[in-house]
Image (cartoon, rainbow, N blue to C red):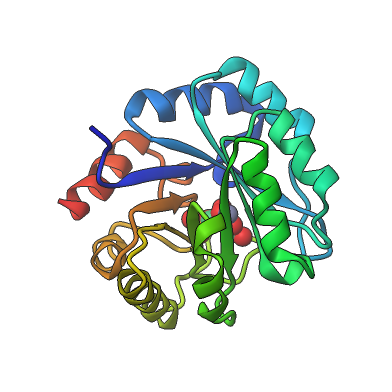
Length: 222
Ligand code: DX5
Ligand code: ZN
């Protein structure tokens, strides 16, 4: 049976020179998803991981769910295809990064990859109403993207509730993932609002005792 909640460890906060060990330990400890942030120094003020890096992870961990969060602008079909070919299981894009959001989501799905739309803190959820048929998940940012270790912006929690209500009204069940400042003290609140996949960077990879950190997250969700 599918787990009710999934924890997605964000490698942005991992030890990059020991990444193979970090990912192995995370998966062994029960982390469900590996969250892979792609930044271009343009859409966000930071720069990270290309497709060759993702392919290297895929080679070592062929069965892991690889969740690629594209913070690049403009996002193009070539970029999406490169990450799909490199082994992405899920790919999410921001609506600000293309004029043709519906087409890009359909393109992701045509590559047999789960498609997600990411909403920045100031981005309203209204266009989701017209996109549910090409969407597998919604990624709600609870910080402004670009860096790990920021504090969750409380007003974003209402957006999860709003999306949940809209989806129920329309009789659809998109997965709601949440990213930014998630920790043991707010994870339950996020779950109650309707999220079921939780990205954790600093609250997992950033902790000395990661096993214990994961235990505390899971315990808070109970
Ligand atoms: C932020 C990234 C996040 C980041 C989360 O732009 O999208 O995935 O790694 O890190 P924490 O959990 O530390 O906020
Ligand atoms: Zn992310």
